[in-house]
Length: 434
Image (cartoon, rainbow, N blue to C red; front, side, top):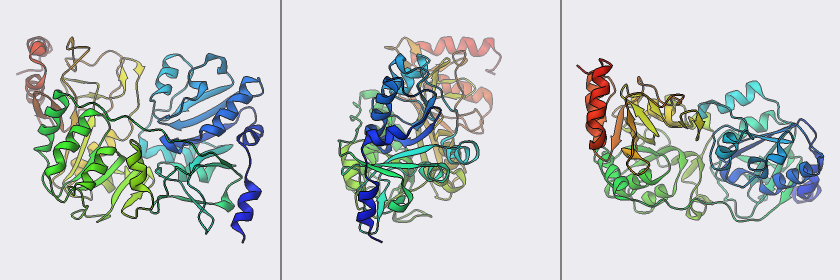
């Protein structure tokens, strides 16, 4: 087969793709840089002309400024439906311009296959190789499930999308149309490491032995942990999100994946997002495997690596050890993501540990993040039964398997000193401190 001829036959403009969209369509996209800015901008232009209504767009971790997430004139025309709220989706939810699907990230492919029929799946890909294949770049995630369920597949070919040789591929024969759009890929600015983040990073790093396998979240504290791990040896990576700090750990030799029980010698992730260095690292690199999330985030898979370490964040924790990582009261800030998957996977691993880390206060030190009870309406992300270690700049509290009274004492001990008396009073009032 002449793949280049087929390529030319299927090439079209973004407006050509948008012209095929009909009222009431369900369009799927995947995470971060896998999204298709040119196609979605063209769909929005059609909606601006009142040519579309009732279109829904599912996605995760929006990284482009899609107009339907910020402009109320799109209401009723295009509705964003994130699997995880971030950036524009967070504001859209607060303004009533978007819907939201609560989920564990690992379950997205199952939900997609069981509950949705997509009129189109749109994804950014690297240029086609001589065999007719496009790499889905830095995203494994739930793309396979959407490909299985979509009636039509449209790709946006971007020369800046990395070619992941150990990642998902899509053949020219599978797609219905392709749009060429070489644009700069979104990046995340490196978070500023303050004294609190560095202190927490060092506290966690002290608990991690050589040869451990790590999962890091995103933000100042995970980056600080990464900085503190540079003196370690023979670390491995099995993570939901591959971050800039992980590239640094590989480059300095701290990570070589030599002690892993599965995928030895390989870095395993389901998607990558951060600096341009991440895309450069992934491109044509056989040492990184970008696999579907229902495998990567499966606790039964995660725990097969010994000494599995998970490090995630929280917005607040109550004295029972319930972790809220996704809302401020009823205001949705993100989603469950893979936090619970990695808490459970790490705790089931031989020698594994899970850390939920955050600064002890918010709003300039006026609010304690360790509270007698969660803010009314707050979403419980990680339950009191799953939580392992809680970490602030004042130390570590080991909660898993501990009696309630011990949990209370430990949590109060790592709260900011300004709030410890109040927390003690509230604990005694509730008879949870013996």
